[in-house]
Image 1 (tube, rainbow, N blue to C red):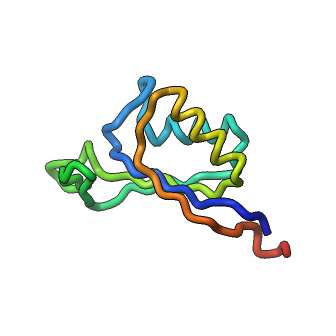
Image 2 (image 1 turned 60 degrees about the vertical axis):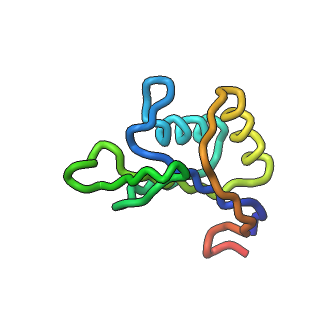
Length: 106
């Protein structure tokens, strides 16, 4: 088992950076760093720290909340955060200690 972190970023589909959706930009950076995988999910509804409501409903289809999760080592976490800082990006995220690996491995 590998020790590391589950990091989860929270954003909206409409938020962009470098002419791309922000979540896609973060995925591209994670891939460039060699991070093994990430999962992007679009939620039905939610609200952010600013109190603004976001949904995947008919009248707000362009701005549903998104959650991007990945299991990373401590080194990978540091590298990814350095990329965000170097690009002056402020993205809300959570970080939880985990052990991760494949079911057929010890």
